[in-house]
Length: 95
Image 1 (cartoon, one colour):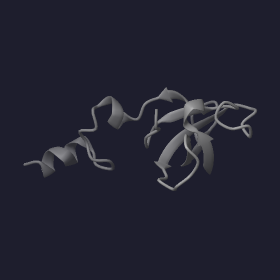
Image 2 (spheres, helix red, strand yellow):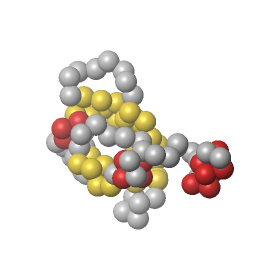
Image 3 (cartoon, helix red, strand yellow):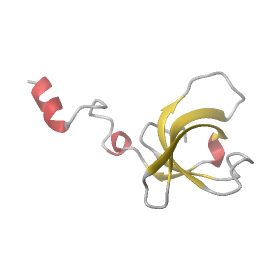
Image 4 (cartoon, helix red, strand yellow):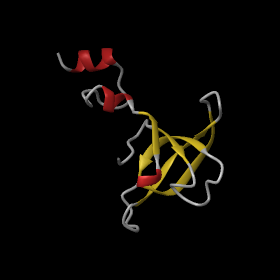
């Protein structure tokens, strides 16, 4: 499962040894930088227990070790909306 922008992940030691304590992470971007097979650089926000962003981070993790907590809205809706536009803006643009 390759993460997508908006996904919320639980990052643990299974993803990288640096995460001995679980980290909740909201993905902003998945970099396409060349790296080791099965590894990826992610930009996003570390989340606190209430789900609020507390720190922006870039992390280097094994994709197979990530656990998805919540899929991005685009993934649930079938990616029919353009990011950054409200539903009303999409309706106006399609006329």
